[in-house]
Length: 305
Image (cartoon, rainbow, N blue to C red; front, side, top):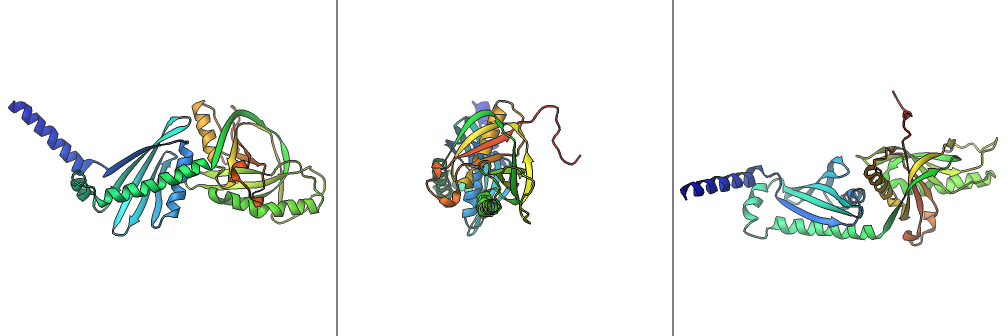
């Protein structure tokens, strides 16, 4: 009996030492979301920007990012971990630490419903509510492997964040269409966006906003407008319905599909738009075709050596 008590005492002491001084977080919240990790990642960042004194301080990958939120006299660290459960569901784990009062929280948490716990629950319930609303506002349907046809186009090169992509399109929509129509250039399809660079950590992109045209000898000259041939290629295809501000959600869905089926892709999405955002209307009725080019084995991507 004495030996049993001694062993139990050592185990209890070890647990207390771990709980008080080694455990890397104060509180853990876990919930499921009916969407894919990329959509959750972007929702966390959008939600963070809407809060006072909140900033994303680190992103290891789409599934792991760290957030810092200041509440008056406290600074909280939120460590987000997003796990894929299946094609339609993800599990979200949030490890929360109060930077300045961690030890106090660990001592009082088992015995009372602390302000730290109440504030954490309110904050994450607010996020979860906004995430559920966002999920209702778009649809992504994976179509699988497809062929992106070759086309000649007029385009305007733009640099922005992902969330600013739609405003860049709207700003240049009239510029492109007006100058082309005025100079009797024959249009040859729907406008599209070609992503040429994507920094997934900073959510920054370089892209060409393009209008397919019939190539002719004389094309209008403008300081902002350029011309190019977009070559056809094999690609993964998805249909996106929703506001074009968040059409990048389909990029992440296609990347998940490529990973699941071991398909090598280029992270340079192409989006073809069937609606003019300037006309408004029910965004869920808007349609865009989203393509993620498939890498061709034996061909090295162009770029600096």
